[in-house]
Length: 225
Image (tube, rainbow, N blue to C red):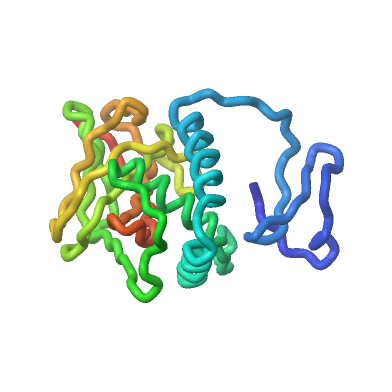
């Protein structure tokens, strides 16, 4: 999907030929018109279930709890693919935090995280990840003093010349960290499997037990024996 910036197309909606135009919180965009399908992979089924569950749970929060999530969302800085700032809603942050907590094996939260606290996840150079074929483990080194759970997501195998990090990611696994520097994440049943020599992209994000989410880190990786 490509974001577009044009005064002529700013308010266009619908499909023309093979292109569909729309707009969301990230701005106007155009994409190829497609026939809807109904994927039933483990990760897609889980994502749909989480979205439905926490959307209902959001409606059950008190007005004060929803206000606190809205205030927290205003402090989260996110960028779209054009480098423009976008703002999440409180509901989106509530669903996102609890979905990551669930993946991390932590308890869901109703109270919003503190708005004046930042959770920084920083990778040590060189910014690369490795996949150990024999142990099915994803490894990367972060700077010390990070306390929380790091979740890893990986792409399909990629060609050696691939450079884009905007690819489909699948949840790989999570590891709790207490001021450690290295993160070695064991795979889950839904994780991708690579063979030695294949390249991939990886995405990492940290989360605390309060639902506070760190910045996201995107890196390249390689599978090795």
